[in-house]
Amino acid sequence: MPRLPLLSPRRAWRDLALPLALLLGASPAAAQSVLRDAETEALFRDMTTPLVAASGLDTRNVDIVLVNDSEVNAFVAGGQAVYVNSGLINEASSANEVQGVVAHELGHVVGGHAIDTRGADAAGKISILSLLLGAAAAAAGGGEAAMGVMMAGQQAALGKFLAYTRGEEEAADAAGASFLSKAGISGRGSVEFFHKLLVMENRYGFTRNDDAQFYSTHPMTNDRIAFLQDVYEKDPAWNHKTDPALEARFQRVKAKLYGYLAEPADTLKAYPETMTSVPARYARAYAWHKDGFLDKAMAEADALLRDAPEDPYFLELKGQILLEAGKPALAIAPLRHACALTRNQPLIATTFGHALVSADEAAGTREHMAEAQQVLKSALARDRENPFAWYVLGIVYDRQGDQPRASLASAEQQVLSGDMPAALRSANAALAALPHGSPDWLRAGDIAMQARTAIAHDKKRK
Figure (cartoon, rainbow, N blue to C red):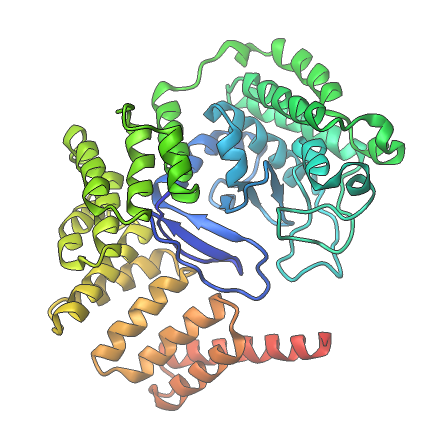
């Protein structure tokens, strides 16, 4: 999923923007990475907006966030965001299966089931996806894992057992079923995904006898399949089909994500050159690019564009491949077109701005700096929590001789990346040079105060 084009960090997490280039925004508190991709985020929004509306939550305030973690898992973190692991997308066979998972997680959000995690890590993750609890526990070590620390992803040890009570699990199941019903979305995917989890549990030989107390609070998957299948089969939406266009979008995003994260050799086995579908070409474009075969990666991108020349995500893919292959001047045209088609979608615009700056750097000119500044400021006006956009904008200001605003942009990038000492230094430099009382001066003061507070808090913890 591009960077999945350029994934950009936000919400104190590391963000990776998929069209191809992992963009790491380091955060000391972040135990995992967030994958950000314009196409994927648009898909998640369209897949889940009916469910969020059915739950009674404000669709403007709920995010579905993709986490770079191979575990088949998803979780909520105390706010109105549902985190879905890349491993879950890889395991899911359809958009409907993912909708079933999200519906369940929204049940936890609406039910206020997020538990207090005082003493847990600063990232603030507070739960694991109960739908996958049996499989996650088995993968983490069988009965011992059931009694000990559960992991919200491979790297995210929380320091204490995080769990929902049996009542909360059953409530989330019931709430998720009601959200699917109200949205007119079939529960088949939910049941099908539970069956996959049951197979995983059986594969690891994980049974109720491993720990009676653990399972007294976490219903086993087969119990929940029986309950949910009975509920869903009686629902009028049971036989509703997923929109074919939505399903096609899911399959291509799934392949894109696989190509972006998997080893190139694995991608080429899963999507051999004999396959000429859109998902296969998408996946192979990433594989060839990661392996350094520019001609082959461009051939896949051009094949996609021959069939859909106005697809902004194919244009973005081509632009990113060229940019990351050291040909930024050639990347400008497809990225400019992609921006126009998406009305300057912030992630795509950030990549475009990066290409403009890189082209000038390569040529030793400042031909594109003014346009880059405009493009990046427009992107940040719609998505301020993008560290990489701030980083590139800082370069633009520096090249234009505007050191105060270069310092301010650096402070914005550093605070989002969790580097509070650096953010404080940059903010103070901006404060010393910006016009007193101006909006930028006030913003620099806010960042300085935020950084000082975070530094003092860290010292107290030590």
